[in-house]
Amino acid sequence: MDPFDSSESLEGPSKAVATTAEFSEPWSRFSAWLECVCVVTFDLELGQAIELVYPHDVKLTEKEKTSICYLSFPDSYSGCLGDTQFSFRLRQSVGRSSSWFGQEDVYNRDAPVSLQKEHAHLHGYVYFRQVKDATVKRGYFQKSLVVVSRLPFVNLFHSLLQVIAPEYFEKLEPCLETVCNEIDQWPAPVPGQTLNLPVMGVVMQIRIPSKVETAEGSPVKQQQTENLLPAPTVLPSVHELDLFKCFQSVLIHVQMLWELMLLGEPVVIMAPSPTVSSETVLALVSSIDPLHYFGDYRPYFTIHDSEFKEYTTRTQAPPNVILGVTNPFFIKTFQSWPHIIRLGELKMSGDLPKQVKIKKLAKLKTLDTKTGIYTAYKTFLHKDKTLIKRLLKGIQKKRPSEVQSAILRRHLLEQTQSFILPLEQYLETLMPPQRSVSPWKTPPQIRSFNQDEFMKTLEQAGPQLTLKGDFTGLYRRFFKSPNFDGWYRFRHREMSQKVECLHLEAICAADLLTWTKDKSEVEIVDLILKLREKLMRARKHQLPVKEELLERLEQSIQTIISSLPEDLQTVLHRQ
Image (tube, rainbow, N blue to C red; front, side, top):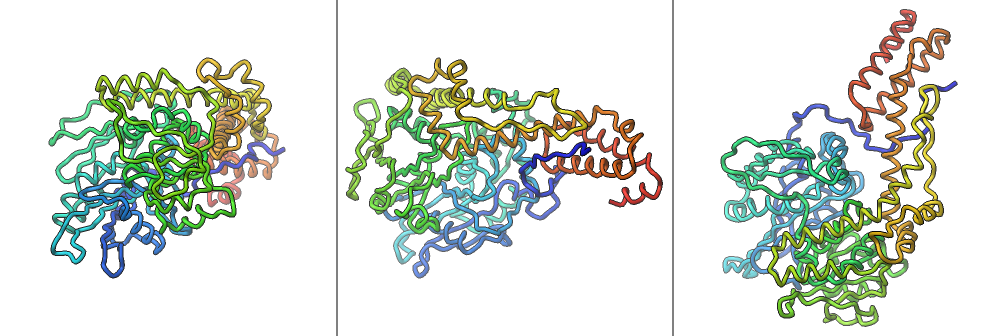
């Protein structure tokens, strides 16, 4: 008999979890938010070069430094004069350890999947200044202040840069040191709480959504905050962009763009500037919320990128990635890609923004290619004409952009939820019944996902009322996408944890001491070791069980040990 044994291994981070809110390591509070702050300048002999990294002891690899250098400057085709803000995302070098101090487990446990810290990628948020300067040989002052983080908080970090960058360009390094020391005093990023983040005389008030409220669809009521002086600058969102502004010239194609994102199709955005490029890519990725986009995406990508050869090879199919570019050279490079969106500066047709047209890929040949969506893709679902009319009417009525964005975001959210709901309902049928979870047996297995079985459920429980068109075809295509694979792995892990929790609860409710009465010492020791392992796994994998349940299990272990001979007790206490 092998009670309490679990054959289902739970994936998850293996780092130790910090149990206190206070951080004792140097720069640990800073590291909960940022990896580092970099200053990138233009050197006449070296080209782009990192002038400064703060904190000084941050270990960036040469590959990462080179990537940050090239990604922090707009290319010469963009002609960005004055101040420009944009963002990028780069792959972390293999083997480099991060500076998280074990806090990522706690944060990622409570954050929605799309806002979790990334293990393999870094986000860069750039404030670039290019102004005429007669004292410089090239005649221009060119410098970027870059915030590097694992958190996808584009709104928060661009707002932070708007506060610190202009001041830094005037006062240089001492100012940066002060800012980093202030960030090192910030509270930890805790989802679901209102946080006040002071920097350079400004207090930014933010709220990171929690996993609970995104699942329930409405935010937890905010607590009354103390009277702060100065009055805080409230950021409505740490991560949401002005979706309407990003999609102004492609509004009539929103349905197509949503499907391309849902299916994780390879897409290139060719934009007139890094700002438009990065905002469009991030807006596209967020368009399938609350489903996480599991493909790769690069808000700003250059020919110097270390993945350039990997992404532009013609010997294999294009990878599942969204690339944002500004260099016209890419038109020739990406001719084999199935979906290319060429954007220009926004043009108006009367009161309304001019909409780009769908064009054949064959026409994508010259460097002066006109704006348009170059693709042969045909949508599975019908276009929602009511939404488009409502948004276009809103433009004519001068409806504020944030209201237009809210309408568009709500539509996309409801469409994604309608698509995901039948999948979620089917997953529930794969879970073993609670009555089958016994403390005396291995936890029951979760049934495998059967695509044909799922398709049959659509007749009764499909999204017919909300999604018009060939939704069965869309599901079949979705099953081949990285987003289905990522979603299913993530949900399977959550389900495995749920079964593990039910098993723990069953064990805690059982009379373990009575069970041991007629058992040999070998069986009892085996039981103790298995219970200890179960306890350790529950804490290591942050299982969603109450702490008192784990304490009760710990107490049960101690009670069983106390019933054994003293020599055995001594051995077990030492372990």
